[in-house]
Amino acid sequence: MSTARQTRPADGTGVRSAAGARAHAEATVRARWDSEGRTPHQQDMIDLSLVVSELVTNAILHGGGLAGFEVRTTGEGVRISVHDHSDVIPEAAGGTGELPAVHRGSGYGWPLVIRLARDIDVRRRPGGGKTVSVLVPLRDAPA
Image 1 (cartoon, one colour):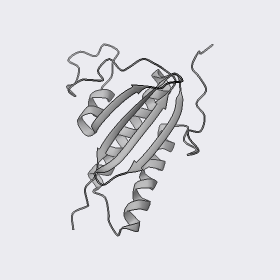
Image 2: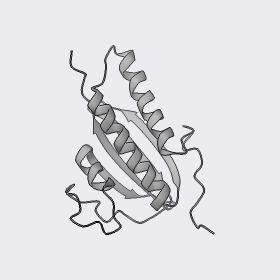
Image 3: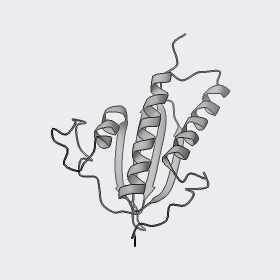
Image 4: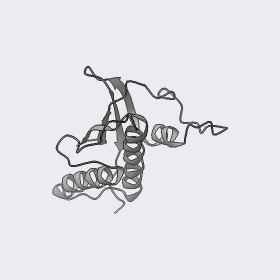
């Protein structure tokens, strides 16, 4: 029997999976940018999808399940916060984004997050678990 906690909809977003998180993040960005008459750069939206997928998948597979998911647009991009049930801080949390020379059970996801995101912050939550928060930069699409 698995000791992982059940992943339930996070913070009223209805997010239970990486696919749901990607859709929610993309919809949040598009709604905000559409209201301003702007279009986000397609490559930045791809980066956003990759980062969201990695963080949510890590929470589900390695963090005891998804405990929360937040998306907030800022002047610089999108702030993503993923909450899970594990107090364990990722081994490479302070890493440089270098890909591992040898695959030792640790994947390429965290180096990818480090390369694509900014202002990466990993904190333990008072009631248990942790929050991984990152800023994914967004630019306007070329005219």
